[in-house]
Image (cartoon, rainbow, N blue to C red):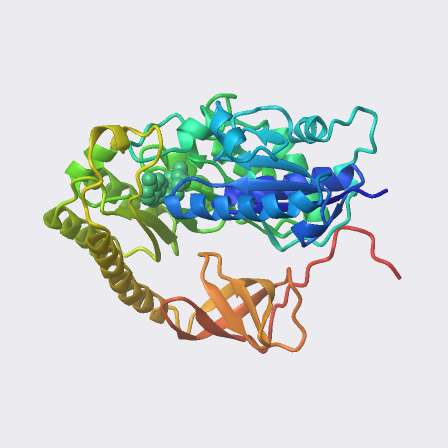
Length: 440
Ligand code: SAH
């Protein structure tokens, strides 16, 4: 009998990456993925608690599972991701039907977690690299776990533990396996990805050079970066390694030094702006994204205005903005009241979004007429789409494209969110030779 499994995930790209690896392992044990949780023998939920809204969605999903499992008691349920605390007593009381908890602090290889969960013993057919499944062009890959910083608002260190890097050889094997199944771009993930390797005597720059050697891999991105840890060596690696894209995610969180101090971010706006300036001088064509939290404890109108001003000066390509949401165990929860009213948080969020829509449309308009290299990801409502090296979404018409191609386009128009492009008529069209054997 085939084991049918359903892996659900929400939240950050690290959950997406871990959920994909879990699916691979389950498939390698002979399992078969199914889209509907109602048909699965095994359900794994990759949960998120970084904000209350995400946590609520996990609770909704667990309530849905409660009903399904009532009718199919043989279903096995595992809860993974950041909802899993060291002490799961409360969760177990609320959701007694959960069979296993997979802590993001656990450093057991994923495969062992799967076996542990399924109560299987060796030997099993084990060759994840054999697993043939449809694979997307761009895939996230976790390179380090945990975080040693203690930003006062953030729950992640409590749930994911201290910083641990995965061995480079293991990462390389995972990526080689992905490339054999059609992946052309990887996004390397860590809470502070720039710190990759500090615990195992290597660096992210070296990892980037190492995986650049993988044939068939076209592009490499990485996130999330932290201003204090993004050093010159890394900037130069991004600038000089052809596969590494000119694309950096560098959260600033606030543009006011007092707010940054209360957040315990460990830098001032001046440092942030200095790093951005240096990066832009070393990495031409850089696409820059940042994160902002609005309505942090005690954030005044003036402090918020300083954040707007910083965004106007920095002119990022993308800004992810979230309203502050107090989280269990965090210092901000213990120290200060959540005193910015929800209405005011919403207003600040919209104000940033409005400003950024304007900045983005100006930046994107500047690309009209330029030639951009696109990695084709797919087709949506008759339009092909892909991304530029700087991570901008581009739509274009083509009769012959395929996901995974790298194509030269000329940008013809732009909005805040995306670009339109035209295939160049005399393309130095680069069709990738699949590295795997082709059927006749
Ligand atoms: N180390 C990662 C953290 C991921 S959390 C990083 O630096 O990006 C992703 C984003 O969620 C953070 O950048 C922050 O902007 C936001 N966030 C984290 N905790 C939050 C909270 N308590 N309330 C609102 N937003 C939060």
